[in-house]
Image (cartoon, rainbow, N blue to C red):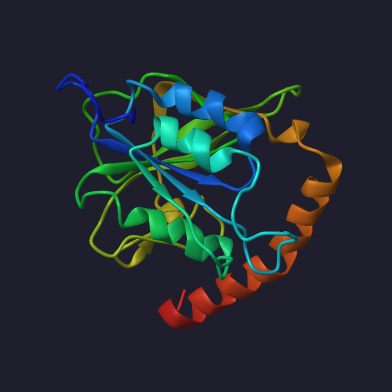
Length: 213
């Protein structure tokens, strides 16, 4: 079922890491867009502490759908401490020295990832559905021994360097991420904005203090 089954040797050494919570409306498009393009897919489910939720795990069929497609599906009986902690959890499923793609349930990967990848990070152009907005985001990362996400999911710690601070990070040719998040309900969008301004910033401050960033 997963992205790593029966793939040709030319498939790039990439694990797609998908963050979900009650996303069944979007998830099928996301996971089918990854089929045949990555070696494995990891889906991590669950709400965050500080973000409105009735149950700490998805109840709308997201988990069942993920199990149809993904190689690994992680669920929990308690809410994640923060988005950063949740995203850092999926890195452990990526073999050291290989690559991982950050993609969310309301996004689709269009195009093919090259079989040969260089350096430690690539940006991929993100396009927002229903708008003319498009810009490159840090989305494809090489897995180092101590790789960690810093705060928001586009900033990754590579040994003693935050990858977005590196100059001249290449935009991956032939790929883009189509983002459907603008179509979400206004209540969830508002709650997510409030979360980013509160709990997630607190996590970022803790990270800065720990690593002297």
